[in-house]
Length: 530
Image 1 (spheres, rainbow, N blue to C red):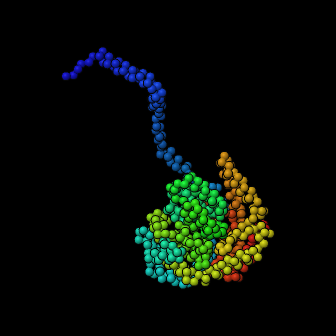
Image 2: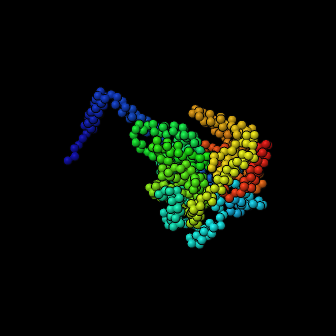
Image 3: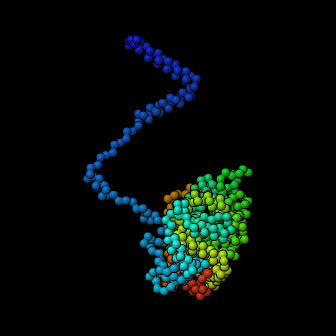
């Protein structure tokens, strides 16, 4: 039966409810005054937010004519705004510049489109003279008849061919390692290996003189990166102490690597691996060595920088090298224990997501390694003889001090750099801007706009020096000598100075080396006297 409630009864009930609520609020304020004030403040804030919440504005409907006018007037922003391509600036290049095009194999001599006669090649890394070798070419032809040209598949998806496994076995045995993994591109080897082992929270201690491939891999790993001064063992130990200072005797819970090049491409220098190995053991780090310019060149049998110092390869956790220098092929290898190698088959991005190396290129690398292993003296003795001859002839013929030049080289590196001394008149503005930029960058409170403007001026001044050395290359080419003015990216942690790079091969003759030195003397004097 439904109860009949008149208006008076209802009003009385509501009054009782309000009285009870009021008593409860009063009690709360008496017992918990501060909490009650916070509650009231939140209620007031919510009410204010709801009352002041803006309504979403409805988009204005445009007519067809208005839409057409807007579309007609719209211009997309350039992908690279004018004046903001820093790499183009520092390398004194424009998008219309075209590289020289070879019309023959890049061996000790080659021909170039638009140039008459043969050019003597001191520009590419054909250290052992395997480029264009007739027997290797014939082996490659036979391989193409069997396997075709490309693989069209990654190693994990029907891209593995028996010659890939043969090359991995050959490289591992050559370097006295348990295993080896083959990558399809030299640059991607070390830049894939580093992120395969190092993640966020791990620590990388890297020589600031390392090549860009190493720095790219370090960046991709998202690890904490510390750079130490090039080949400075005191600075390396300072960084290692800094990293380990928070351990306080506890076992670290992250991975820690020292990363160096065996032979530094940008400075023709050799890493002091013996001292680095001692520091690695002292501070319980692992070590990666990128030895693309040491493997096939240094050591009694060409096994690289590690053999050069008579060290045990198994003391180095990871050894990488590309096959694009001494072995005149394509791709790269990473060698180490079976655990290190097998881990990369699912974690090495360049291995997992790239089509495997063309079979005939793998055969070319196998043949090159086999020849060096069978008869190292036939290749290494003339190479080292030519390196010494090139250096001594340059020093004999070119008055470096008088011309304010410097020869950057450490024996027995197969590459040499010629650069300007800081007191060269052409370099004065560059040196002054470099000093200002270093000081301003060290100032944490520096104005960002001012810093950017100073960087742009520095890059423009560097571009002028780069253009001078590019003129040297062009004039040398007119005299049938090919040398190189290397290009770099502004993302280099330590941007190398402009200069000329000379690469020596075991196949160069004494006459070719002397001709190269005479041409450089003449051209350097002509360009830098202007």
